[in-house]
Image (cartoon, rainbow, N blue to C red; front, side):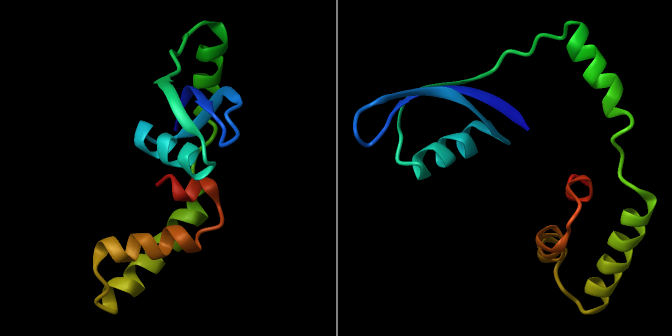
Amino acid sequence: MAQFIYKAKTSDGAPQEGTIDAGTIDLAIAALQRRNFLILSIEPVKEDKGFLGQFQTLLSIFNRVKQQDIVVLSRQLSTLFEAKVPIVESFKVIITETQSPRSRSI
């Protein structure tokens, strides 16, 4: 997920600034519009890969999907394929039913 910096106005006309996490800029805009913001500007946050960024990258190695989650995903996909559910629909169902955020990232 990416971060975006935005400047907007609320429905009352008050200025609002901040950051929002979203997969794409379109999703960020949609999320801000759902909050009834009038978007003045939005741009991606520039990532600085300093020491902290490198440390976070190193820590992300340990944030992996558990083997048990992969087994469950495989079984669910197998069942849905046997039921002749289309692959895209199968993944949509599994994503909505999965509890673990790490499993959703597969």
